[in-house]
Length: 239
Image 1 (cartoon, helix red, strand yellow):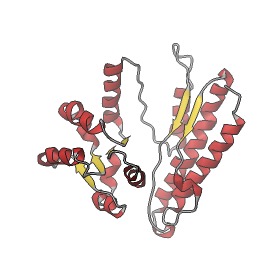
Image 2 (spheres, one colour):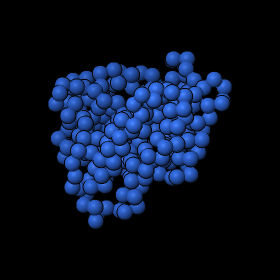
Image 3 (cartoon, helix red, strand yellow):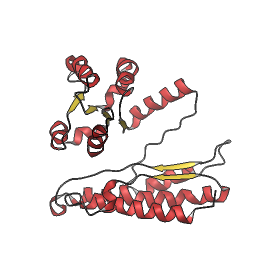
Image 4 (cartoon, helix red, strand yellow):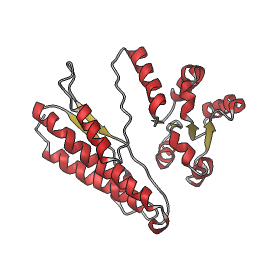
């Protein structure tokens, strides 16, 4: 929502978010309003509002459009509605799991003729991260080799640290920081050994200062920022 507000202020189009995590938000419309932006939602329960919402998006009256991921299983929505919505957006965020991920993969295979392999992985779990590293490091499978790593997964909470569920705060550290460190450590040697590759770690403007009511989040992003800058210097000249 913060990114949307900044992009809209600079003249960018609306944000489209497709994520199962939307169902976990207490009231995303009100949360967007508190951030100073106008949000609408598209789901299976408001079919009769879709045309009106699309018109509002086209008119520039909507800052962020929240879409439930099961809509991707609907061919009419996926082939007709979503491309129109996505054509003029300033930010497109897609966070899907399992079957929905395969729908996106199938579309890439069909439309672009590329090989796409999916792997659903809970990055907060050390053993699952090890499975992902092993799978991504299997350069001996055919003619493939790992050419890049993008660490983009992350979660955020809002509120005083002492009032937030600690298990979720701990999961945030595992996902936002430990997973970044683990995947870089597990996949970097192969790329360095071949003399080629790239690592992209997503931090945040929150990395630049302490952030009350988002203390854990800001701290994890400060780690990602510092760690990535150090790696950038260390890996210079390695390929």
